[in-house]
Image 1 (spheres, rainbow, N blue to C red):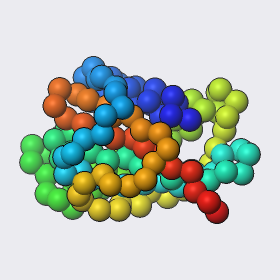
Image 2 (image 1 turned 135 degrees about the vertical axis):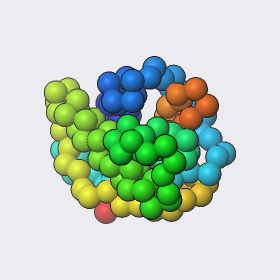
Image 3 (image 1 turned 90 degrees about the vertical axis):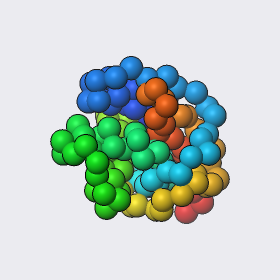
Length: 141
């Protein structure tokens, strides 16, 4: 599942933002905007997918979609939810093509702060010094 999310995030960076990115597994200690979407895999397992970005990454997204050079906190929260929808929705299409479909829920904004949630898998997408964390946690539902 993480592979389809990484591919979707890389596609988002390349095709939407217009920038190349690097991917590693070292989480940031930066203040982040954090949203999540719960998904249900075909085998009935439930997962929470977190999207957490530093303000600069999300400002890139805001500039792209809203043409705002300096967005306020509410706008950055909205852009975090939209980014979660776009990346996780794209990953859903990729996963379906690979024969591992899942359904996605509604995005929820969690908080602004350190990414301090438990997770099973994690990837960090870097565009220059800007960062986006994608993390997966299996839920016991």
